[in-house]
Image 1 (cartoon, rainbow, N blue to C red):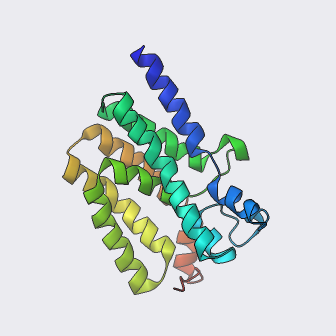
Image 2 (image 1 turned 45 degrees about the vertical axis):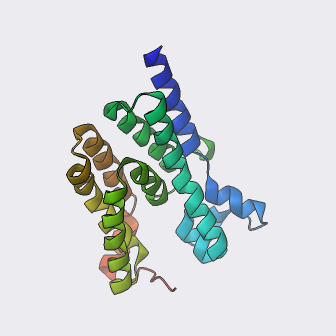
Length: 198
């Protein structure tokens, strides 16, 4: 029964993570297909830039919830087994990045990772958030802040939680976040990345 429940939670985590929040919200307000606007990404930053700050904020909250809720479910239903909780976290994250509903073409996963990390280690998130804010304030690149925070969070989770399974899960998530920012990294290197305007 325990193994069956784990598989069930794992599958549900992926399917919840795969819900395209930004796409659904923009269509709901008559904004069309967000994939055909701006950067073509379904995440909060592109929604913010192309549709507006309110919808961008809602997308951020929705994408974060897709990560947080499955992990919370894993903690309560699976008696907080770090290995299984970490696996559920990765499943929810992969759902966002590779959603079955959109032909496995999803977002970069920053907001969903944020929701996951908020449940796994709030103190790690606080430190990573301060790093994110510092990087964005200094250079005005959301992508740079996201990459910096993603690179730092596995170490922070390890420092605050001391759990090898959670370290491995956060390493997988953060590596994918950074890899999915490769075009941003190229633009940063060539000096033509879009700057954030408050």
